[in-house]
Image 1 (cartoon, rainbow, N blue to C red):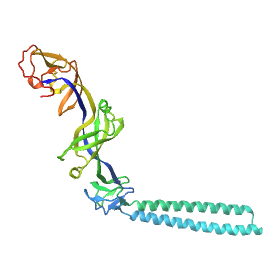
Image 2: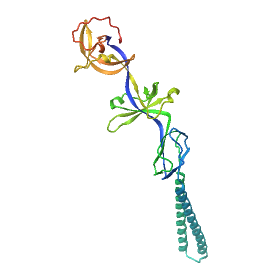
Image 3: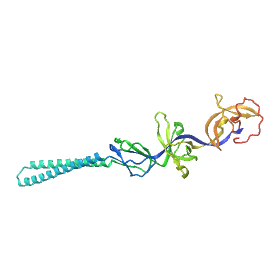
Image 4: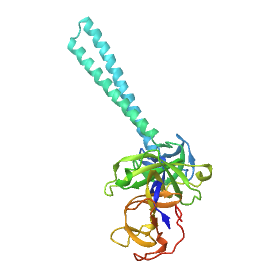
Length: 330
């Protein structure tokens, strides 16, 4: 038996989800071709900028040579047009030809220069494509997936490797719209992660401003705070569940198990003048108090004697012989 009394309930939300790396990236092929020299495998550590593979350069080297030769030919035409202009300028000054011929030479030189600049741009594009045959790690981390093998031909934007940085992990939890209103950045949670014996602390880092299409749930991102003892066992994709502390509430409350719902209206079994009385109550917010799950109720007086749920349903008016009640739970 317990006494209904005012307590400070620690309000919590149940959360669950999979761990994911805050920083991750896919290495993609920026040009099409055959994969070569890809030796990194799952679990290997890589550094930002490290060369981790290549795409066959034969075709791209040939394209660069072609573009460079076209640029050289265009430069020769510029030189010819410049000499022609110089000659015609001299002849105009001497009065041997008209200024119209000089204008034509100017136009020819301008056209040759434009062709040369376009050829140089083509060479730059070919050089960029050749540089893109080198696959480099965009960030520090570990290889999580190797999606192709040496000798395979890949298309542009094909995924080659996935890199994850396990130094910063977060939990992505989906909450209902009503629950999400209680969540604020900075709130803490205790998580139990599969394979990790010790509970892990997490802190709300971000709240998605939009709901998920279809489910209308709100995604909340919790930054996982690791210790040397837990860090070694954490991996991307591990399932985690726990409780998020959202605040506290001082209210009249009874243990959750004392509230009965076998009637249309929720009620508790109280003891008045030694007899059992079924007292209808309105159930409010739930929370923890001294390790016991409590629930706020309306319809009871402070200090009312309430039977625990383990007693079972008793008929109203049943006469009880009991010991003196003690404040708190029992």
